[in-house]
Amino acid sequence: MSLALQPKPRSIGPKFRVCIVASRFNEQFTDALVENTIEELSALVPGARIDLIRVPGAFEIPVMVASILDRDPPSCIIALGLIIRGATDHADLVATSVTDALQKLAIQSLRPIIHEVLLVADEKQAYARCIGTQMNRGRDAARAAASMIDLFHDLDRTLPRSSSQQSKRNA
Image (cartoon, rainbow, N blue to C red; front, side):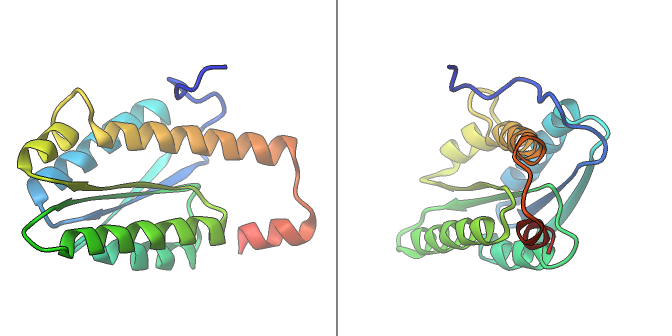
């Protein structure tokens, strides 16, 4: 069994909606993450609706994700941001807080939330992950989102929920 992500999902179509929540901070890098994510998503999920919401910084991403999940939740949410370490522990504290909050939201909502809020040591690492082509995390986020949408769709089709479970997922 291959552990690689499928290059193109099998069952994804135009009825799916993906929401990207991206920070504005470190704009040169986060803009590139957004561009690469949208470009890859458009190729993998042609015709799907892609909504983009920009927030000031990484710390604001989880509260926006929670607000989206409280409305008409999309098939998947992608969280994009970039935190560059400095001389203090602030970056690590923000990154841990964001990671913990996004994981809790995903489990509580039973919706895939793709976490690409990156914590890097310097601008060289930021460039490699956001703008470069070797390990582009925007493209990785799009592939993970497409794969999770496909998996959730297959799961709903092959293992139907009871009515109480269905209402929880649709709530």
